[in-house]
Image (cartoon, rainbow, N blue to C red; front, side):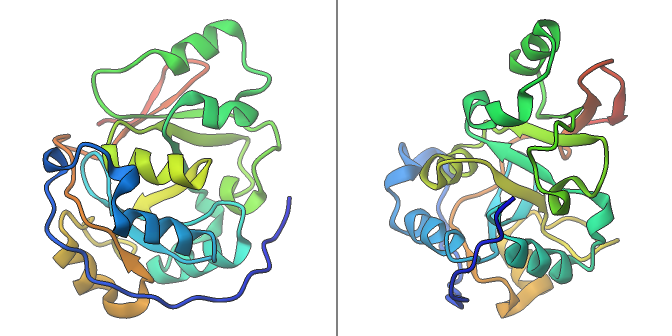
Length: 211
């Protein structure tokens, strides 16, 4: 898989207070558009998800993923979640699934759900961590989905916190953890989910982490 060789970018901006419900189309929000331009230049950004703030980057950039893992003090062996605006953006990662598995993946769930799907070797090893499964989620958070739409594909999603610390639930907490080490903090707020996404094996439905 390609390792992007683009110039390093440092462009930090504190997020503004913008309620999710007050914006009808995040894809036209100037700060969200700026965040996506930075993602294309190997930046690591912070953004709200269904329940907590997340750190994200372009999954195809080894340099960006390496920076993200260093910020969190997280081992690459653990693997990372990819989120997308819809299942079509994840189609290459879903090749090889049975019709039943694909239907399960595409069926909306009552709570945010990350599915562990069979690793078909399309994703780079710095995303899978060398595991035989890959963690994928279609997000229903409007801002997170807008980032994916503007980026044109999936986005790395991992909780915005140092390894072993509580996940940030506000932009202020993100800044407390990372200060100016993260390249950009978007506007917006976390969704209404009480817990981080549920994690389940797609093949069996077995719950790995309750949501």
